[in-house]
Image 1 (cartoon, one colour):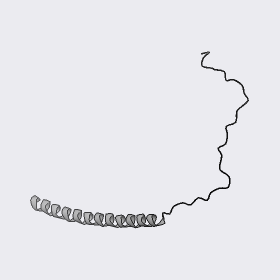
Image 2 (cartoon, helix red, strand yellow):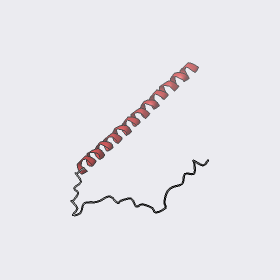
Image 3 (cartoon, one colour):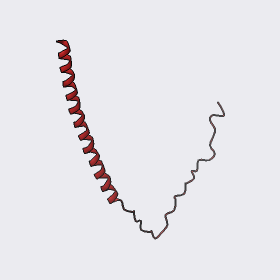
Image 4 (cartoon, helix red, strand yellow):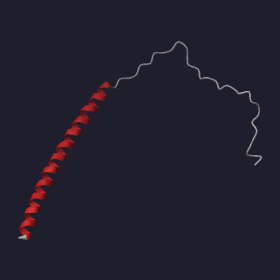
Length: 78
């Protein structure tokens, strides 16, 4: 009696597990298709960026000097 119930439980467990695995594989396949589609769209949209040349070249801003005078070392006194 217990063995029959256990065998029945095992059969139902295997069926449920097989069904869940099938649903999981379908979900993975669907997601993979979506990712492939998105990857294709991104690849199609990739275009080189064209930058128009500027009339004046850009110069880096020079660092301004502060007029505070020499810096006093605080750590040397400690």
